[in-house]
Image 1: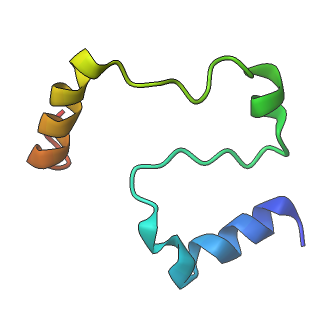
Image 2 (image 1 turned 90 degrees about the vertical axis):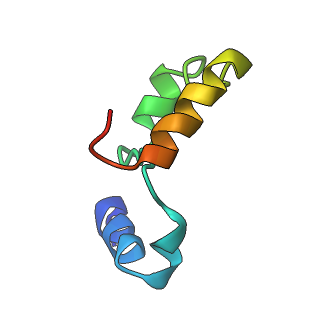
Length: 62
């Protein structure tokens, strides 16, 4: 199978239940290769309350 077909099968399976609001790159590793220092970034502690507030309010309240 191609990487995209593998990703589609995974997303349609029960194993993908834990993915919520995730960014998934299906590009053969190109993004990881060119942006090695950008991702993943740590979340500054001072921004945590804002993230938790948005999470608690739910979608559509950005």
